Amino acid sequence: MPKFLIEREIPDAGKLTERDLKAISQKSCRVLRDIGPEVQWVQSYVTDDKLYCVYIAASEEVVREHARQGGFPANRISRISSIIDPTTAE
Image (cartoon, rainbow, N blue to C red; front, side):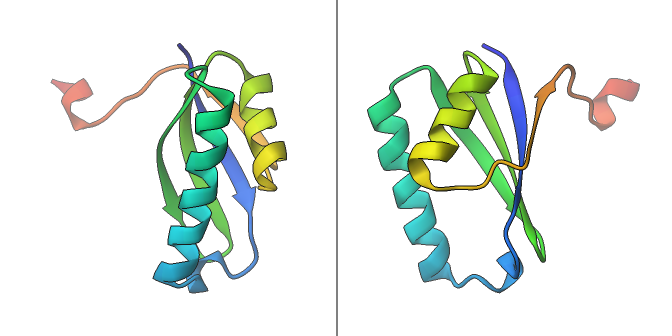
């Protein structure tokens, strides 16, 4: 299945507490269970005012449905075409 990078604009995201992040994660996981195996959350990166989330999903529409059901913004969804890291240079 394809991977997607989701950009979520959340003002002051970097100030979210561990408790806040746990609650957001729990809600996301509940929605993922309801949607089924067509979408998997890999991980997210929290910055000052955004979350960048990596998902594996059957389609962009499934990612959007997860955002809609969870009440999460999905300001930009980009399909990941390749992944590189330092080992790519070898």
